[in-house]
Structure formats: C-alpha cells, structure tokens
Length: 101
Image (cartoon, rainbow, N blue to C red; front, side, top):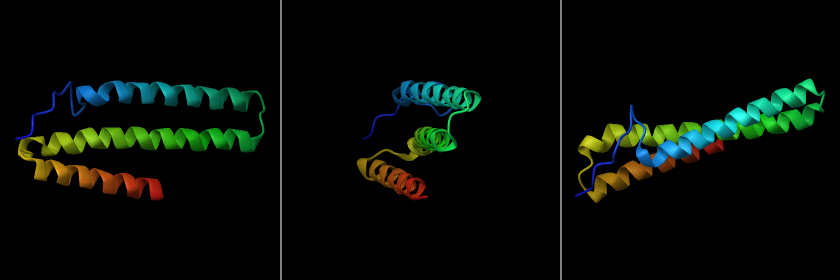
C-alpha cells in the first residue's frame, strides 16, 4: 500500500515546494537579467539566448507543478504500486511531450 504524500497548500507537496520556490527565484533572476541586458543594449542573439533559457526554466516549473497536481488528483485512488507506476508513466509522457516542442 502506497503512503499518502504530505501536502502544504493547494496541490504543492512538501517534497516539491523547495524545488518550485528555487525555480521561481531562478526565473525571476533570469527575467531581471534579460531586462538589464536589454537596457544595456546587448546584442539581440545574446538576449534571445537568455529568453530561451528562461522559457526552459518556465517549462520545468510547469512540469513540477503538473507533477504535484497529477499526484494530488490521483492520490486518493493510488493505493498500490501499480497505480503509482501508472501516474509516473503519465508524467513521463507529458514531460517528453513538453520537451519535444
């Protein structure tokens, strides 16, 4: 029988909360850095590289939040390792789909 994951608020798990906050801080720093680069007149290719990196960080944040949401929605019905494996398979498929775009 699977153990229930401890929740903070909403769908966030204790396990992912620190990772989500760290990702948010990194994204905030990246956006501020992009603004500085723009204000300093840095070359467009350099700025666009940072925009792409920020987009990747946003994708990762979205996947962390999706992970918590899926596990939170499925948690009441996940009572055995088979269902837990199905949830992990679903999340892996979504992660692959997002990264392929």
